[in-house]
Amino acid sequence: MMGATIKIADAELEIMRVLWSEGHAMTSTEIRDKLRDTSDWGKSTVLTLIGRLVKKGAVSCQKQGHLLYAPLVSEKDYRNSRTRKLIDTLYDGSVRNLVVALCTTGNLTQKEREELQQYLEGGLEKHE
Image (cartoon, rainbow, N blue to C red):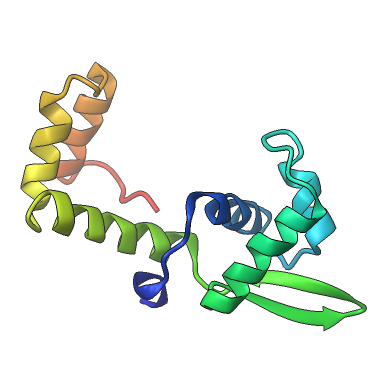
């Protein structure tokens, strides 16, 4: 699981989300255009963030007329590694403790509680 060793900062994660959602290699201009609604980052900021991700091994860079960037870490692998890290760090490695915390904080809607119950009983398909 490659994503387990890569630390991605919040701003870098915004770049990764664009790449994951588009599902194909993109230029920095295309990435910046997709971020236009949620950030006011200029060209240099986007290029700096992409450069960090390339250096970390989270994103590939290939020249095909333009520089094209693509994720090397899948969203699923990254989420799984971050979830495991959260469970290990905050809940002493116990998934049970995480679920108890979710259920007792009052942040779950009734529908979410029912879906969680069904999932735990094996009635829901696994989500990716």
